[in-house]
Length: 129
Image (cartoon, rainbow, N blue to C red; front, side):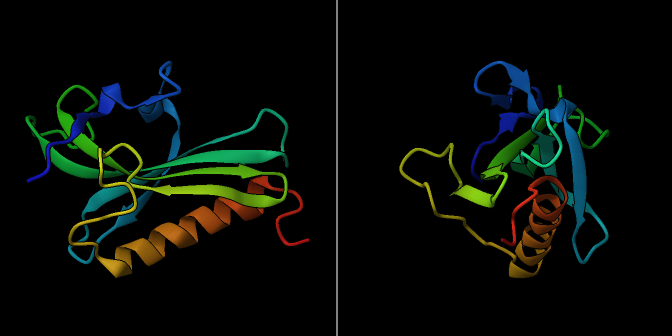
Protein backbone atom coordinates (compact mmCIF):
# COMPACT_ATOMS: atom_id res chain seq x y z
CA UNK A 1 0.00 0.00 0.00
CA UNK A 2 1.19 3.49 -0.82
CA UNK A 3 1.80 5.44 2.39
CA UNK A 4 -0.33 8.50 2.91
CA UNK A 5 0.03 11.81 4.69
CA UNK A 6 -1.78 12.58 7.92
CA UNK A 7 -4.86 14.62 7.12
CA UNK A 8 -3.73 17.39 9.47
CA UNK A 9 -0.47 17.71 7.50
CA UNK A 10 -2.04 18.38 4.11
CA UNK A 11 -1.38 22.09 3.78
CA UNK A 12 -2.25 24.73 1.22
CA UNK A 13 0.98 26.50 0.29
CA UNK A 14 2.58 25.18 3.51
CA UNK A 15 0.38 27.21 5.83
CA UNK A 16 -3.34 26.41 5.83
CA UNK A 17 -4.77 23.03 6.84
CA UNK A 18 -7.02 21.74 4.09
CA UNK A 19 -9.27 19.71 6.39
CA UNK A 20 -10.63 22.99 7.82
CA UNK A 21 -12.04 23.96 4.41
CA UNK A 22 -15.58 23.16 3.28
CA UNK A 23 -15.92 19.84 1.51
CA UNK A 24 -18.20 17.66 -0.58
CA UNK A 25 -18.22 13.93 0.26
CA UNK A 26 -17.88 11.38 -2.54
CA UNK A 27 -19.68 8.15 -1.63
CA UNK A 28 -18.54 4.84 -3.15
CA UNK A 29 -20.69 1.83 -4.11
CA UNK A 30 -20.35 0.47 -0.56
CA UNK A 31 -21.88 3.70 0.81
CA UNK A 32 -18.55 4.74 2.32
CA UNK A 33 -16.96 8.17 2.11
CA UNK A 34 -13.46 7.43 0.85
CA UNK A 35 -12.96 10.68 -1.06
CA UNK A 36 -13.60 14.29 -0.14
CA UNK A 37 -13.54 17.32 -2.40
CA UNK A 38 -12.25 20.17 -0.23
CA UNK A 39 -12.68 23.66 -1.60
CA UNK A 40 -12.11 27.29 -0.77
CA UNK A 41 -13.72 30.04 -2.82
CA UNK A 42 -11.74 33.16 -3.54
CA UNK A 43 -12.58 36.08 -1.24
CA UNK A 44 -14.81 37.68 -3.87
CA UNK A 45 -17.77 35.57 -5.03
CA UNK A 46 -17.44 34.79 -8.70
CA UNK A 47 -13.68 35.11 -8.94
CA UNK A 48 -12.67 31.47 -8.48
CA UNK A 49 -12.11 28.52 -6.19
CA UNK A 50 -9.25 26.23 -5.19
CA UNK A 51 -9.92 22.51 -4.86
CA UNK A 52 -8.11 19.60 -3.21
CA UNK A 53 -9.44 16.08 -3.65
CA UNK A 54 -8.29 13.77 -0.86
CA UNK A 55 -8.61 10.00 -0.81
CA UNK A 56 -8.58 7.79 2.27
CA UNK A 57 -5.46 5.59 2.57
CA UNK A 58 -5.49 4.27 6.15
CA UNK A 59 -6.34 5.23 9.72
CA UNK A 60 -5.26 4.41 13.23
CA UNK A 61 -8.56 5.34 14.83
CA UNK A 62 -12.18 4.27 14.63
CA UNK A 63 -13.16 7.81 13.73
CA UNK A 64 -12.89 8.23 9.97
CA UNK A 65 -11.59 11.59 8.72
CA UNK A 66 -9.93 12.23 12.08
CA UNK A 67 -7.15 14.70 11.15
CA UNK A 68 -4.78 13.26 13.75
CA UNK A 69 -5.20 9.60 12.81
CA UNK A 70 -6.16 9.36 9.16
CA UNK A 71 -3.74 9.13 6.26
CA UNK A 72 -4.85 10.51 2.92
CA UNK A 73 -3.52 11.01 -0.56
CA UNK A 74 -4.03 14.17 -2.63
CA UNK A 75 -5.39 12.82 -5.90
CA UNK A 76 -6.29 16.18 -7.50
CA UNK A 77 -5.43 19.80 -6.98
CA UNK A 78 -7.29 22.37 -9.06
CA UNK A 79 -6.98 26.11 -9.44
CA UNK A 80 -10.04 27.82 -10.89
CA UNK A 81 -10.29 31.48 -11.77
CA UNK A 82 -13.22 33.65 -12.86
CA UNK A 83 -13.29 31.90 -16.26
CA UNK A 84 -13.21 28.32 -14.96
CA UNK A 85 -10.70 25.54 -14.44
CA UNK A 86 -7.23 26.87 -15.20
CA UNK A 87 -4.91 24.20 -13.74
CA UNK A 88 -5.64 20.58 -12.81
CA UNK A 89 -2.94 18.43 -11.25
CA UNK A 90 -3.44 14.70 -10.76
CA UNK A 91 -1.54 13.04 -7.92
CA UNK A 92 0.53 16.21 -7.45
CA UNK A 93 2.42 15.27 -4.29
CA UNK A 94 3.83 11.91 -5.33
CA UNK A 95 7.46 11.84 -6.39
CA UNK A 96 7.83 10.56 -9.94
CA UNK A 97 4.15 9.53 -10.00
CA UNK A 98 2.51 12.83 -10.91
CA UNK A 99 -0.35 12.10 -13.28
CA UNK A 100 -0.57 8.45 -12.24
CA UNK A 101 -3.26 6.84 -10.08
CA UNK A 102 -3.23 3.17 -9.11
CA UNK A 103 -6.54 1.23 -9.10
CA UNK A 104 -8.57 4.28 -10.05
CA UNK A 105 -12.32 3.67 -9.75
CA UNK A 106 -13.67 5.62 -12.72
CA UNK A 107 -17.21 5.78 -11.33
CA UNK A 108 -15.83 7.66 -8.30
CA UNK A 109 -13.71 9.93 -10.48
CA UNK A 110 -16.79 10.82 -12.51
CA UNK A 111 -18.43 11.92 -9.24
CA UNK A 112 -15.31 13.92 -8.39
CA UNK A 113 -15.40 15.71 -11.74
CA UNK A 114 -19.12 16.42 -11.30
CA UNK A 115 -18.42 17.89 -7.85
CA UNK A 116 -15.59 20.04 -9.23
CA UNK A 117 -17.82 21.21 -12.11
CA UNK A 118 -20.55 22.24 -9.67
CA UNK A 119 -17.99 24.31 -7.73
CA UNK A 120 -16.76 25.93 -10.94
CA UNK A 121 -20.33 26.82 -11.93
CA UNK A 122 -20.97 28.31 -8.47
CA UNK A 123 -17.75 30.27 -7.94
CA UNK A 124 -16.40 31.13 -11.41
CA UNK A 125 -18.59 33.86 -12.84
CA UNK A 126 -17.52 33.47 -16.49
CA UNK A 127 -16.90 29.70 -16.62
CA UNK A 128 -19.10 29.15 -19.67
CA UNK A 129 -18.25 32.35 -21.59
